[in-house]
Length: 138
Image 1 (spheres, rainbow, N blue to C red):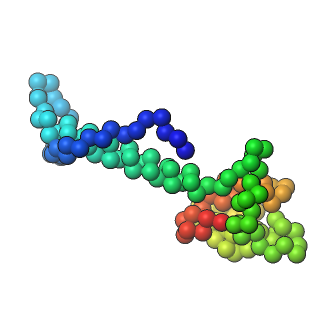
Image 2: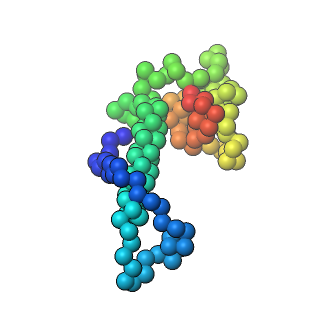
Image 3: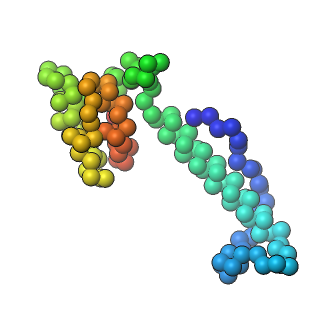
């Protein structure tokens, strides 16, 4: 994922405003000290950088699709597709490690998938939305 803007690199840490000021906000006529603005810009830059780093890591970990939108051949060997001596979709769906976290949000393999081919199933975002929870990305 490419980002157009980079977060501000504001090195002056400043000082966090008191809770009361954060609750009521700046009032007319009040001149906030520069430390409060430095704190805001410093923490905002760090938060934005953190979000961009997390989004980059997610983008790096996602499957590569070819120009037709199907799973790239280079990705297939890294995917746990179950035993291939029967119907590939049924074998993959029945494999416990392939869908280890499906129950987290109430999904089951049956309701999460209406794919016609194993490739469609593998790139189905609903069918695999929770695989990363335990580090099982494949």
